[in-house]
Image (cartoon, rainbow, N blue to C red; front, side, top):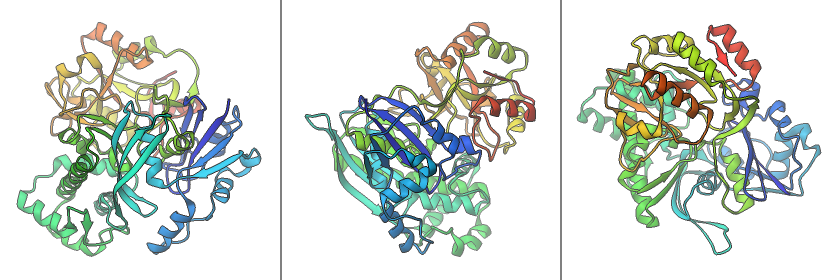
Length: 499
């Protein structure tokens, strides 16, 4: 059996993925979970130690180093590093490169994003949209993807937008302007946007300050270093909440323009959507306006492109079964201890099984709570050291979801928290409702997983089919990875963590 290693490293959120010749995904993990540095761009030795069981026939890098260097030069930044794939792989693997592979390959940044999505989807053909801050020189790409008669994945580029015109850079610039950390805390900007209250005239004025040509997604300024020239103007007119709200509206308008173009150019009713902007679950709720079926791999950002690079080297469909692909904490999922703590203390942590590949906790590295209490949201926010205005997500039995939430068009389930839905009874479940009465829902099918078993038992005991689910970390730190991390969290924050 031959094995392929995919690498994403050098910019932010470094990661590795391992697949075999059958297309099975054997491992995928984030460096930050090992180094404890949020969005760490360097491959940590403890992450690389997870690769010891395999010798690799192929090592695939998620972008072309020489193209990245050209982008750095064009944008006036310092040089990124090696120009050749071989040298980039040696740099990022370090001492671990003592076991070189027979084949080293690299692929365009946006193509790696596209493959991570399409080759993990169930689609035989699809429109593939990639929107991020910047990938080499591309900021938006539209592909049509399909499998040929031999089962090889084929991609045709239909349209692209080049740097510096970037929806992702626009949203990051706004994130920086309102006092948050760009390339990290955009999700807080998204949550803050629900508190804005400006009129349509204000929105038009705001949009016109940035957007030059929405048909081609062109911006008036290069926003790579922020909105420096407009900061004074915005501070005079809008508070942070209104700025976030209008930025979200602009982003949704532009994303919608891209999706309309993708449907027209591809002729496909299937959408694969990738890139960091695909994590904006509020904007994602509108994707059904243009497509009948939607797939967003649960790690659509750069870390997920480690899997995309491996997929391109493999050439065929991957066997996507689960997002639980990272470090393993062995043992049975602690259903009974979790139930006992939920019933007695109403809040509990869990660190069990394999870690999630992606930025969202899905039940194996989660802080769980009873969603019904009026005090629960404040208690969990205090534990996590985060702003009180930010929402929490419910995890719910899939067959009960539509009884409690109104899902947007074409979203038939949401196993990876990728859209928001209106809560039918927000007064009964205040801990999982945002100020606009929406929730970023996670549905759990009858898959035999630990979180599924826990929800079934919780439902039997309480009549409530859902729990509050948030990541097991505090603001500014990566999610808990191993048992040592779980013990540290338990001691520092006074919350029982079951394994």
